[in-house]
Amino acid sequence: MFRHQKELQYEVKVERPDPMLARRVQEVLGGQFGEMTVMMQYLFQGFNCRGEEKYKDMLMDIGTEEIGHVEMLCSLISQLLDGASPEDQAKAAKDPATAAIMGGIDPQHLLVSGLGGMPTNSNGVPWNGSYIVASGNLLADMRANLHAESQGRLQVARLYHMTKDEGVRATFRKMLARDRYHQYQWMAAIEELEEKNGVVVPATFPREAEEEAQTEAYEFWNLSEGEESGEGPWATGSAPDGTGDFVYVTKPVPKGQIPCPKIPSTVLHHDLDKKTK
Image (cartoon, rainbow, N blue to C red; front, side):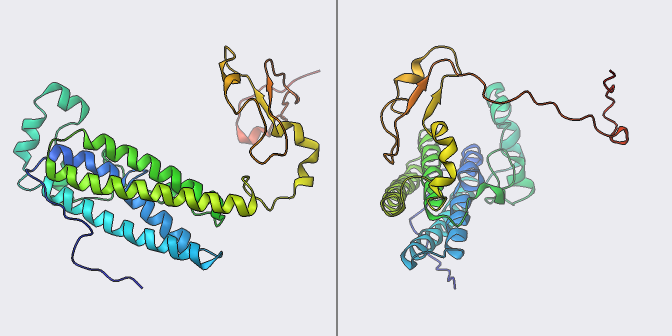
């Protein structure tokens, strides 16, 4: 059960309207790594969690918090759009650089949402359910969550430097602080799960099934010009699970055959000439 409370999680109060910034904020609302994505990702992971209750409870707690972040950003966008008009859009687009980069005020804020936030990114592309990861494997999902929070916090930090509005910045600071904690949280969960089951996903896949391919698990193939990649810890030393040592292959060679697909039926219309003996 969900229950809406009228107060926002943190105060959202801008100093002045800024329709151009409103368009940019759409990215951290409805973009690939926006609040809508982490909200849906954590909630679906929680809905479908079959592991220990503490993991489900954590996912539901944070997913519900993210619903509040979506509401905060919608309020922020609405305040940034206060008083916006078609004339403002035309004025903003007069500057060649602004017109080329941003195209003026987002016309959908005027035409579609009536000066409100939308479930889209900063280019107006609708939010997509394929952005979320909810595999049912806790370690895989927690790693995806850390990635999502890392990208999301990066984008908010970039937005922070795109405005001098102290009210907007205050909202962003709260979000940045929460995103930092969420990274800590996923790191802690990842560490605990790795200690339980190992660092490789899925841990339940039998090691003996890979015996014939063991060398493939430790070789780093140098497939670009130069050998600088050999200087990293991914190319030397032991694997994180201690099962073997990395090998840097300076000049890797193909180990497979040349593909030779059969000529398809002519009714498929590939327009291929059949080979003749």
